[in-house]
View 1 (cartoon, rainbow, N blue to C red):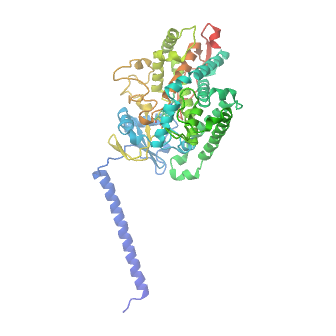
View 2: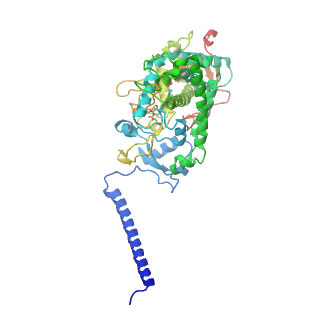
View 3: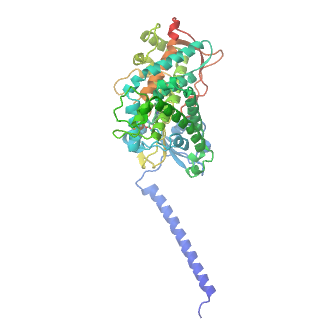
Length: 529
Ligand code: HEM
């Protein structure tokens, strides 16, 4: 009897079910086999150890606000390298000098990449700057412009008079406020900001400008950018959500950057009025040290020979200088001052050195700074205990790498935990004590500088991505602090105590600002004018 249509359909349905069941079985067996193979036979090592975390959110609920403390506790539990998921993103934290050397030395080429978060991207004109650009020819060209054209030795020497002028102005302001409380971070921040503004836009423009509140305008934008960047943005941990900009981080940052654009437009317009030829293409023969940064960069724009940069890159470099230079430098002056004031013997040695090198009938000049060996050691010890970027700027390898016997997948976010390394009792005797003397012995294997070549001490980073602003940052912080300590004695307001608690952020600052009272130290009043 011929099968009826119902029977035929029924048989086909049973066949389909069997096919599906079989396909499902194959899938499960294959997945189990791959997983078993990966764990037992695969040649690629496992991911680093670390907390399992919760589905979807990973380890988010277990983190406190002071990430450097949390990660250092985790390093004690999981070892020199550990992983954790924050949202859907894999993060790897490196906590030993040995492995930091692998990441920034042997495998620096792969790890010299960044994975900018939403705020970083928006504040850098989409990674058109030095700090967030990926490791490629474009980034190398920009970094070369910054190091060789903008921050060259000749240019730094030429801008010495700006630094002198602004530091003297700060000393005078403090003198006018003798006996009242002074916020050390605030006065250092505004000194550095004014120095950078002079270096970038030129004194002529700053002083003679119709745009008289240039520093105030820039400060507003810089503070706005830092505030937005310091907020937690969920989209950074769930990249699939990024296009929705749920917290409006991109929109707010874009608004801040419009403020920067307006400053640029006005100042370039003003510069063009002062010197109509300046916007024409450069001929590559600009004289270093004779021009401010804006002019150097404008001449490099569209240059036909040698390195050239676009207008967007020009703006992005200037933003890098303000963001890289202001917060970290002023935070360091504040930390160093706090440590000196609470360690009486250190204070005595610093003041003795200043009296001997500079004299009490004189003011601190930049030429004195290389002779202030003890103050230099004080700064290094301050950097050891309070590195302003406790994880540097995050890296992201452009290929899967093996570090310390573990697989570090391409694109994961890498934190180099310099905070933990610089306090690790394995490398440092009495690690939590403030002992500048440990940096006075500067010979042989223990060579202490900021170049990042010693993997136990690299507060400015290490390898290709190391901070290019070291010479300028060092000059500014040394000059400011030496002048404040040479010109004034300082005391705490009645009933206050020195406080060392810190606050994680774009630059790690003191939780409670250092507010101290200056009194006159030099006899000659003219030294304050
Ligand atoms: C005390 C002051 C400063 C400290 C502590 C500091 C620290 C750092 C650190 C830790 C990094 C990341 C390095 C890495 O990822 O390995 C960095 C990068 C950077 N810094 Fe600084 N910095 C300071 C001052 C400055 C100044 C004055 C400038 C510019 C004038 C500057 C511009 C930059 C730039 C552009 C980068 C990105 C470099 C790159 O990715 O290629 N910094 N800085």
